[in-house]
Amino acid sequence: MNRSVALLVWVSTLVVPLSFGAVAEAVRGKAPHLPANGLLFWISLATSVACITLSRVLPRRVPAVPAGREATAFIRLVVGWALCEGAALFPLVAWIVTDDRRLLWVCAVDLLALVLLYPGQDRWERMLPAEPIPVRR
Image 1 (tube, rainbow, N blue to C red):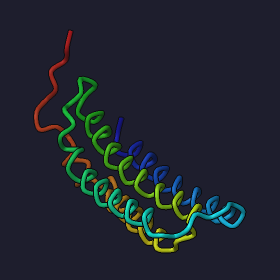
Image 2: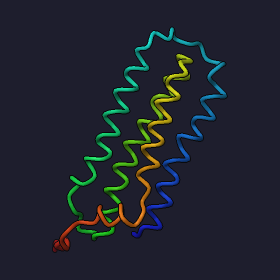
Image 3: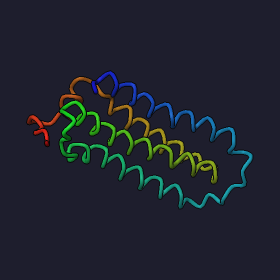
Image 4: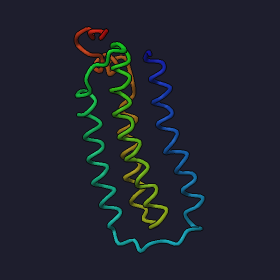
């Protein structure tokens, strides 16, 4: 596992919400809409805040794995990306059923949070465990 594999996975986590956004736009007008009472907007906003916060805090708490330092860094990065990707998908689903355009802004913030988790060399090194990982036998 190396940083180039991590980069490919990071790109795929960006592609999924963007592709789903295109699908959402295509089906949005064909589905009956719930009244846009704001509830899904506020749930989406709260979910985004929680997921973005966790995407920054939780990965460093993932313990080192016996598969090695690079595998640990990869797993830690994926945890953060998955939180941002999930946060980005929720407002798109809510947008389909409510047609509340504010949800697109929530999705955009979630995608920005994901972009900012780019697996550059500095971030990769910060996700590496500090000590060598003991191998279990």
